[in-house]
Image (cartoon, rainbow, N blue to C red; front, side, top):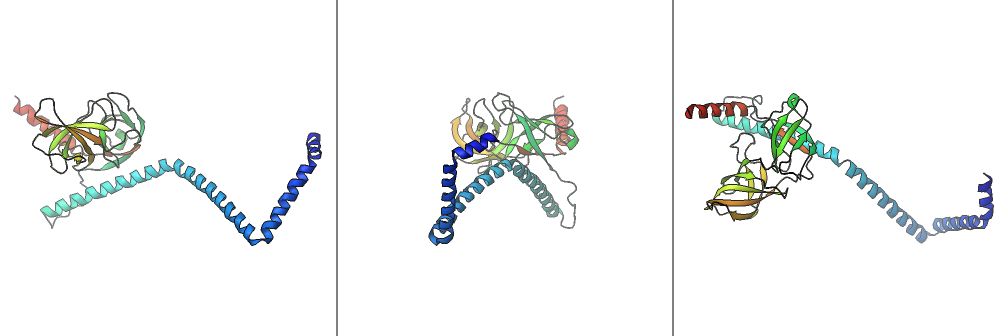
Length: 281
C-alpha cells in the first residue's frame, strides 16, 4: 500500500495533467456540436467494429451446431420427398388406392462423422450411428453435397463407412445429360478427384457434365450428385472413355451426413443371388 502511495506522489503532476486533459475533452465534446459528433461517430465505429468481430467469432464457434441443424432439416426433407415420390407412384398405378407413407422404399437417418482418414489408399470414416439406429452394412451415405460412401461395418452405436476415396470403392453412376452408365473408382492421391470407367467411346462428353447415381445398385436412389466431368481420356483397353471426375464432396470438411436405410435392398440382393446360383448349376 505504501508503494502505491509513493508512486502516486512521485507522478502526481502527470496524474493531474491527465485528469485536466480528460476534463477539458469532456467539456469540449459536451459544449461543441462538431467535436461531439466526431467523437460519437468515432466511438460508434470502434464499438461497432468490436461487436462485429465478436459476432464473427461467436458465429464461427456456432457453425458446427448450425450445420447439424441444416443436415437434420435436409434429412427430414429427403424423407418427405421420398414420401411424395411413393405417393405419386401409387396414384399413377391406381388413383383409387391410398397407400399412405408407411411403406417407403428409402428412409434417412442423420449422423455425424466423428473420425476420418484422407491420406491412406483405403480411407475410412466413422459415424456416430449404428445397428441400434437401424444402420446395416451396404447402406448408402450422403450429405448435402452428394454421395459420401457406403456403410462397411457396424456396431451397436457406430458404423464404419467406405467413402468414394477408397481404392476398393466402386459405385454405379451415370452421366446426367447422356444417361450413359459407368462406375466411379478412386486412385490414390487427390481426394477431390476420381475416375469414371465404362462409358462408351461414341458418347460425346462435355466438360462439367454432371455425374450422378443411376439407382442400379439399390443402395442409392437415382439422381444423387457424385461430381462433374473434369477431363476425358481413353481407357487402357481403348474401348471406352476414362473420365476424370471432380467429386462433389470435400472429404476434408464434411461432417454431417445421412444414411439411406433401404430395407428392401437385402430382399433384392438375396433374390438375385438365388437366381445366379440356379443359373450357374
